[in-house]
Image (cartoon, rainbow, N blue to C red; front, side, top):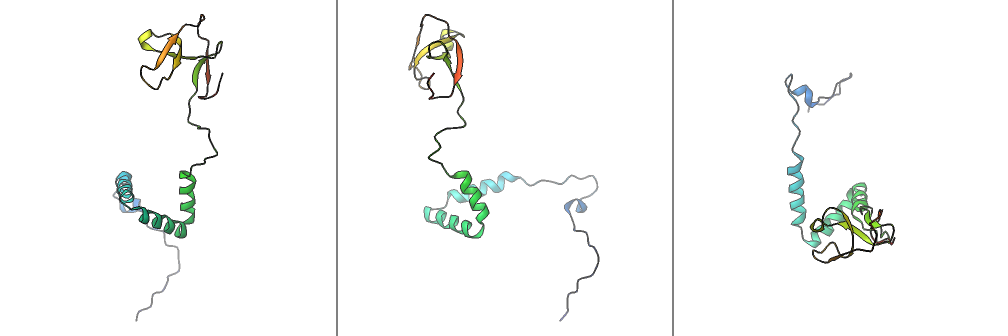
Length: 140
């Protein structure tokens, strides 16, 4: 039986650029293919297999599991949505204001729901809109 002996001395690790011909750029793998494959495999799992896979992940790779849980958990106590954009309102009267192209390009006071087409009523309160911004759901 042959024995394997380590030889003293520094041996530089072999790297990919050392294997490429001079002037050739390394080719990066296409990350989308493996991600799509992984996503489709996860989507094909049944509920029992999904739970078993998450339990295996928690036992064998706890740091990865913790990172995944931190990213996907919903904190019910946190009602504020950090992605909400401010909405315009009239600083003089507190009414909602907007620009409705069917009435021109000026700011106008309105009542109703702008998320549903045709569910608004433009009105004239007797003054020009004074534009200010607030987070949705916060009264003026």
